[in-house]
Amino acid sequence: MNDKELYIKATAAAENAYAPYSDFRVGAAVLTMDGEVFLGANVENASYGATICAERVAIASAVAAGNRDFEAIAVTAPPCGICRQFIFEFGDNIRVITGPDADHLESETISALLPGGFHL
Ligand code: THU
Image 1 (cartoon, rainbow, N blue to C red):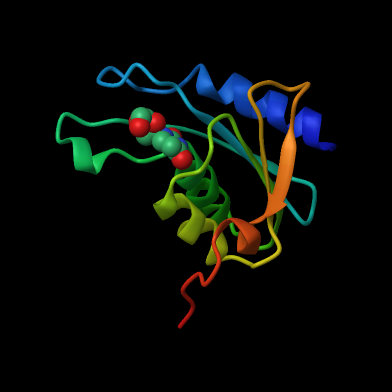
Image 2: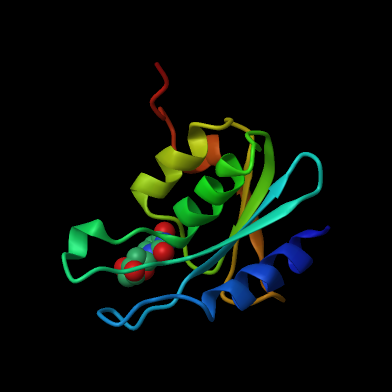
């Protein structure tokens, strides 16, 4: 699975976003070291702070299915600070793939995107 294929899956996942408040749909696709892909979309809430971002939905889905080793995550918007910390939890070298579209992708490690990320 290359970066473009993973990003296209994230784009498809964005269609399932529940975003009635912001109307800003985000999709994410996380690639495990075993080559499996788990999808996420943002899920908003009338109590705005209860909203969960696409990246965290994708990673939580993967973890719930028994996966904790990730190679990369593609997301259709730049990851917010909470999501950067959430990704960092599972490895400093996870690549984060973003872009305005599948033909203009950038990738950077999570440790570059979150200098000084917190670990116990
Ligand atoms: N959002 C994400 O899903 N991921 C991010 O990293 C940035 C923000 C969502 C949260 C909210 O539903 C909407 O985008 C607008 O902030």
